[in-house]
Structures are given as C-alpha cells and as structure tokens.
Length: 359
Ligand SMILES: Cc1ncc(COP(=O)(O)O)c(C=O)c1O
Image: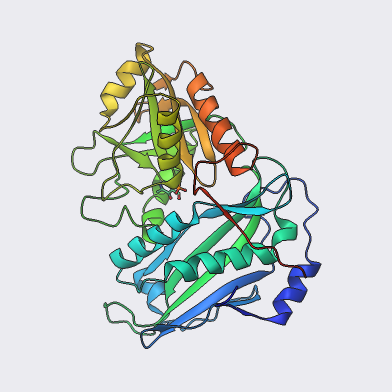
C-alpha cells in the first residue's frame, strides 16, 4: 500500500469490528473504515484510510444542488484458501473515469483507485463473508464539494470509498418486470452511460409505480421511439430467443456493465451465440407468447444474475416467461458465481488478489 496514508485509529476499529448476523442483506452493515482523498487546486491528496464518519459539507456544495456526483459498485470475495480477491477492478476504475469525464469532474488515477479499494478490502478482511455468493460490496464515489450556486463545474471534489459485507441483493430469486412506457431513464446524448446519481434519481418515481403494479424491477425503453429495450434502473438485460442470447448494444444511454461483459465472454466461450442487437419490446413479448423467448434475465454486480419471471404492461397484461430458471440462465449464473468465489478457474486477468495485511 505504497501511496496510502493509514490512520492507526482506523486500524484499531477494523481489528475490533465483527458482524455476527447471518442475514447480511445488502448495505445493512458498513465497515467501520473508509478511504478519502480531496481534490484541490488540480491535485488529489494522498488517499487516507480513516474511521467511517459523517462528511461535513457546505450547504452550498455543488453536489447538493447540481448533482455533480458519480459512483461505482464492486465486490471483494473471500476464496476457499482465505485470500481476498477483487473482480475486474480495472474496469471499475476505467468506468469511474469515463463517468468523471462526462460529468465534468477530474479523473481519479486508475492505480490510486485500485489501491484505495484494495486497501479498504485488505483492512476489512475479517468481515469479508465466507459463503459462496456473499462478498464485501465496495462503493467508491466522488462528489463536488466546492461551495457556490453558479451552474458551472466545481473545482473541488471528494473521493470516498466505503464497504459493506453483503449477501443476496434480491430475496426473491425471480423478478417481475414492469415495462415503463411513459417515463425515460436516459436520453441519447444524456448521462445514461455514466454511473451518475442523477440517473438513479430519474428512475425512482417509476420504481414506486413498479411496486404499485406488484412488480420488482423497471424495464426502460429508448427515449426516442419508446420501443427498444435499454436496461433496468441498476442492471443490464438479456433474453434467450430461439436458443440464442440477445442483449441491447451499449450506447450513450446504457451503462456498460461489467457483469454483462463478463457473461457475454463466458457465454461465447461455451459456444453460445450472443447477439448485441436492439430488442423491440413488441418482438420480445410476441416471442414470449409464442414460447420462442424461453428465458430472460437481468445482471449486475450487486445481484450477479437474476431470472425474469414475467413482464407487465401498463394495460395490466402480463407475459410469463416459460423457463425463468432455464438452463442458460442457471449455467451462466453458476459459472460466474463460482469464478468470483474462487471455486472455478477464472479467465486470465479477471481476479485481483488483495495483499494480506497482518494486524
Ligand atoms: C444502470 C445500471 N446498469 C447496469 C448495471 C450493471 O453494471 P455492473 O455489472 O458493472 O455492476 C448497473 C450497476 O452497476 C447499473 O447501475
């Protein structure tokens, strides 16, 4: 951990902290430590491992008014021999800086990002869960801290990373999807491909409607024609049509998911056909009706892969997927979970071993 400052108080807190609840949930418990680095006059300060604490902000900090904020979501896994591994962290580092550029924020050097996250994981090693499918969820984020009500990019920022030992994101193993045809999550030319808080804020009123419709997740369509499947509010989308996998191509309104990318690579290595093509929602529903679309699933870091049981339209019409726990979904989920959990060999470069710290 060459470029990090480690506060002794943080080490003491980390040593003592335990979580005994077997129901970890998602984001219910936070590690007692965090990493912070401040950006001032064009320079990032040395990232510091410190006790988890409140952040004090000026009431006119730009993040509070103009939502200049980005984040990442990634995981550290405990492997059977006890070592802790991050999954493809360089892709998170790269995407963080893609988001930063789109939101007129300074890049956070990739090595510093990975070192910050690895240090947080290393000092949290005793709370990285053991069971397959559980992990330490890590949330790096950046906010504009500069004071001012003028609408212009800030010049001062805070990078911070916190961590939470986590279990399953979804309690229900199959999700019911509500097709959103009125509102739009992200438009062409907008910020949909950035992992910016504003995109999630834009999804919340529809999420309330989704729950009211007795569904679990919102499926967003393209902003122009309201016809083509984009993604969920926090996950990418796949369908299995006539035995082939199909997923919308990445665009400036869809997040380039690391789970999506990994599943495509795994599926292709198994000899499956994966098409990255636009999916007309009417085509999809028609093929579900004809039983030619037999499986559909959503995927992301938090939940890995979750089969879709049904799709619901505003009219109330429901389309049930014939094999929500179908062969392809289950095989891909198992394989990725086992790779992440160190039970199966990972493709070259997918795992980053966190250095072991002896307290
Ligand atoms: C909007 C959105 N799409 C897709 C994903 C899946 O991305 P990843 O697999 O990198 O977690 C996420 C989660 O990060 C997301 O927030």
